[in-house]
Image 1 (tube, rainbow, N blue to C red):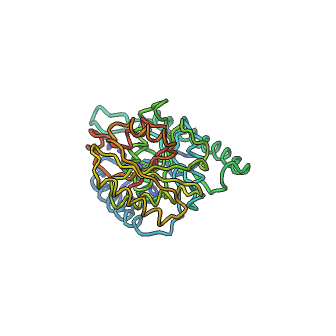
Image 2 (image 1 turned 135 degrees about the vertical axis):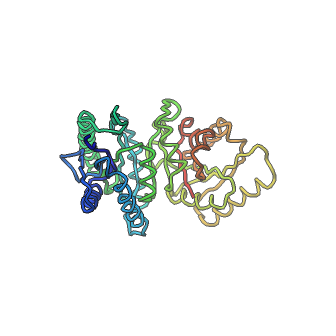
Image 3 (image 1 turned 90 degrees about the vertical axis):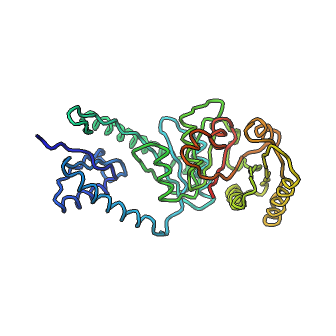
Length: 367
């Protein structure tokens, strides 16, 4: 009976070639399906395939290689600072690009556009229930990648024209394409590259899109980097319109670091900070804590105007919405703690609720 080929791993072109070399040195016949024949050097999915009988030994070899690569990735590097902008060519939000370039100029970073695509599904063999890869799947994925490459070229030309016209800061930018689930690939990129900021677009409450909102919320609740969410319907036209920033605090010491990040990112001669605390009961010590935070940042930033307020519970988002509307808040910021997948599934956090409910831009840190 013929020994069928199975997919061992999906890696970038460079790492797939390295795996192939090592496996063949160990006597394991290896085949690479490069899905972007026109531009093999691009970081897209390349399938490494081997005979089914070689699978146990090959898995052990690849696991050792992956462990070695992980140790290399963890070593400190003098990397260029980055602002990451995840994109979907079918649904662009120009404001996310504009704000991303502006913040990249503030933190002296390059802009990295990340496009994540799904590959076609495997077909299942009825004989032994093993996955096989069909020619039609390969052709479909090749067309997807070629289309994405064309979109990258068009978008690059458009951005360069805006830079030449001084509509965008003259910031270095590049594109990366990844295969997989969007939120997983965005979080994996941030874990490995630690960008200074992630700028993502959302539809907001007037044009609710739960799929897009859930991706943004998932990234906001789990990302190691700060995330700035840009609603399509927000009233801000340009980053220079940011004057009033509200920070929702639970009096965690790490909130001070998160507030400092917000002040540094949104720095302006006319910046005004509002420190908010939401609780079911208003106790005397709550106002004392808020006043203390106000005094702390007033002393450290003499040109900063500071205010504080006590709100009801954040379970009622209308209270928060009314405060932001009445006080003309431009940005709502808060620090979020990482929660496990079951907690996020059955008890959606504040980030998820606000992404789908509010048209106010959100700045979330994970300190």
